[in-house]
Amino acid sequence: MIHVESALKFYRVMAYIVGVMLLLLCVAMVVKYGFDNDTMVAIVGPIHGFLYMIYLAGALNLGLKTRWPIGYLLLVLLAGTIPLLSFVMERSVRDRVRKILPATA
Picture 1 (cartoon, one colour):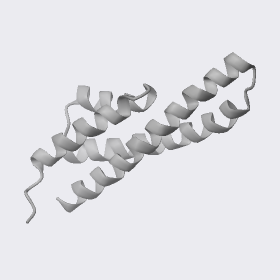
Picture 2 (cartoon, one colour):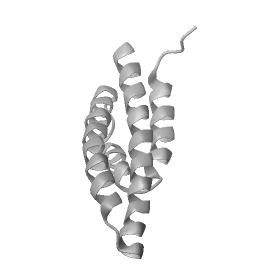
Picture 3 (cartoon, rainbow, N blue to C red):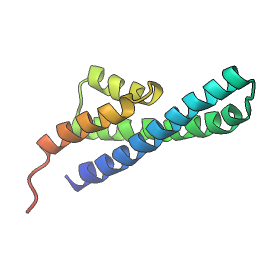
């Protein structure tokens, strides 16, 4: 079960990072379309995209180790594309995985 614990830890870190980057990307979109300045989007967009790919790998790794149903796995994978959803799903994932992990002393 130590592999599941490390996969959960990696997923949680990536969920927060991707969630913050997505919020920054939303701010960047407001700056781009509201103030006609696309510099922030040009910087934050590719960074979020790269980090989202790492998030996908981490979520898929955790989902396969814990044998999530395909619908739940897809929801977790898509959580990095909807603002604030990665934070909500992180808590759901954490609770779901902790239920299957044995209690530690």
